[in-house]
Image (cartoon, rainbow, N blue to C red):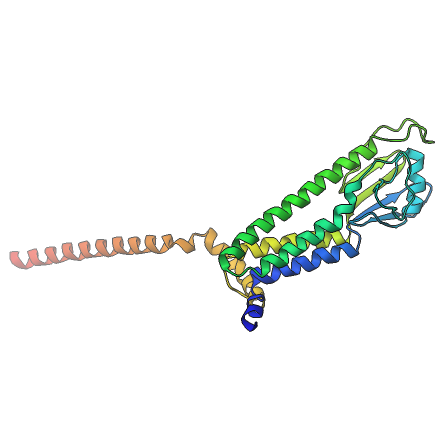
Length: 272
């Protein structure tokens, strides 16, 4: 038991566990936020908080009133009743329910990899987990962006504001609809998710070393020097070889000069 616990302090095992904790924690806080400004609320910013499951936070009720003017509606998770009113004209997004399944599944995978019984299985698990996690989140990102495209191109034709062109709200970044400006970005859960992926990438890079978490600060401090040494070619011994060749050539030149000088001296004595 003691040896197993000691192995879990290795960077390549501890970081997947930390990533798992972050992914589970991301379910407790908003993963995405949208900040809006509108003439109806002068000098005030409205904030919408979106979770990894069908739930909204912040000023979502006020924003829902603004959305009705443009004919834009919150999505309908279909199978459950969310904490906001759903319009009949809203697009269906039943996959929103799968958010917790994805996050918990990836967290369990991290725990499973951390307890791999052999180094070979650990390395294979770290590789598969990193590739799989990135693939899953890139796929989620693309699919959510597609749903936003659908929502922005399914505006209610009977909305009070007429003549609004279809639009695509970005998952990250600024946008404008009529006289409403918005900015979408990560929420706390989004940052936790990004950090979890970075930890998995670090564990993958450390898959061949047995360094523990206690040694991580020292490794981080030595990293810039190792990078500089590699960039200068110090790690392949080439400068030393060139220096040895230069010294050898210099020694040969000096020897030749000394031989010539001895020959001249010897010739002078013979003539005398």
